[in-house]
Length: 353
Image 1 (cartoon, helix red, strand yellow):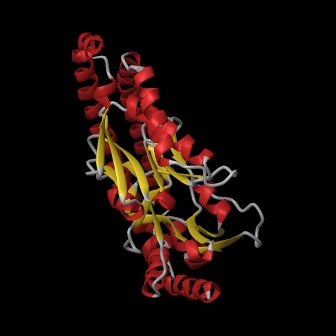
Image 2 (cartoon, helix red, strand yellow):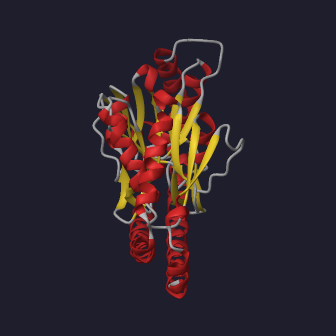
């Protein structure tokens, strides 16, 4: 397993707005919470510390920003039970036990407030336009979810539930023997997100954590959702920790993918943005009543086309938001004392020792 290829998202735009699972990471680790505006060096600081840890042979988890996948929202140093996270909006993280389980790192110490105020009109204008571009993205995603939900409802109505339940019961008994009486823990994250570069999926993370990858070929998702939810519950009930990766289009639903690192096992839903080749494949159509679904095929095709076009428009809105964020950064970068940011990084590295 490569030590530098654990990458995922903890937050994403969704049909209900920005959704994040940052509290799960910050609650389980001592957390350095970075505060500061755009262009103040938060992501660069995390990358520099991550590079230093990797050079020492340590494992680093990289949490990417869905609004700019080249930037980081957080890094997690598992061997030290430490995370460093961007605690600014929209993924606001506030300390629960300040100074005990969290430390606030203020990168605003490095900015020139007088110069920034001179650019206040531009900064406020770019920030407002950026927020509106994100709102536009959410509106397109909300419309796309209407198409997705309709297709999912159709598929659920034509699933042979008895056949599916019998299959998942047999599979669960074979894969998950009782390990302990304690229930396993669930970690929530996103392996995919709608980004300015399109819908991204971190398939290498699955391959890094699981040698056995069971792919469920299901373009709609209703069948895979039922299978993966039952496998998740079976694993947790038998004492295995589970990484649950949710769909950015339905973060409040069942996981879209799960990974059980202790078993080196993953269940992954195959669809347009996820094209992993697994050690075995489960075809959703084996549980579908072919005759019952025939009258809906034209409607399902229509839903898919409209969904795809709406997601294209959502991506376009995020591209606009990214350009506006870049303009915001251009207002801050010339007015930052990055020597102070370097000093903060060096202090953090000393504390990590």
